[in-house]
Image 1 (cartoon, rainbow, N blue to C red):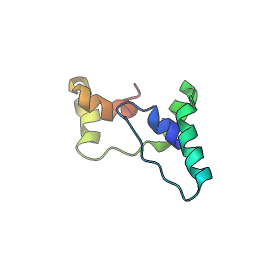
Image 2: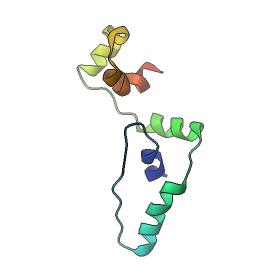
Image 3: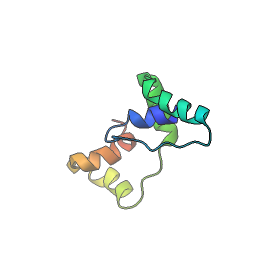
Image 4: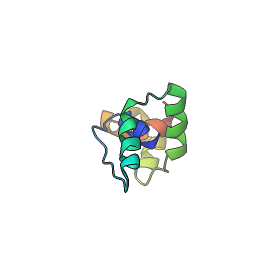
Length: 81
């Protein structure tokens, strides 16, 4: 599930896989065939959300209306959008 979630994230173009056994590699490759629902993606996004570091947390309170697209990509989960 983690690999499928990563593959579906904006800006992620590839993931690195590894395994000790052939079965682990097959499981990792199967992640490319998994389609997560929007609810599953949202839940995984929410549980993996890390706190914003300074100055980003400060920007989310003081300049949310002036953020660039790059800033918004980082801030979007914290702004509830």
